[in-house]
Image (cartoon, rainbow, N blue to C red; front, side):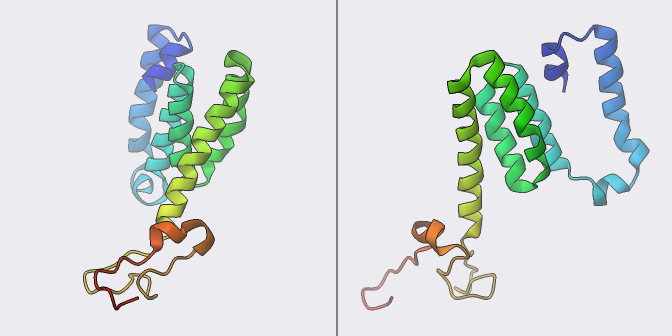
Length: 152
């Protein structure tokens, strides 16, 4: 958050007030923060915005992509961030940034769509090992790995 404030040109007093509020806000929320507030996607959203403001646009959109893969609400930030990059760096960079964010979302979604094998050899979701939720997208990552020639 301090990176974003510095990039926006905030004074030392304003930065101290904003960071103090940011640090004390969880105390005001009490136990609600543990059960109702999504800290990880919020962290990724703030980190993505800070990276965009610090002229690390592709890294910022990748962080926003991770946030979107974790929870949908960081997607609200994509249009204004994309407009900012388009205005400051041009159309090509904006499209590259959008592609970086979309690639991160796609990789995370495809990897998480594959069923996980447990120690007993069965899928944790109750399906056969090697079965995928999204066969067309995840055919390669979910293909069963066989060691013997006769099994399949």
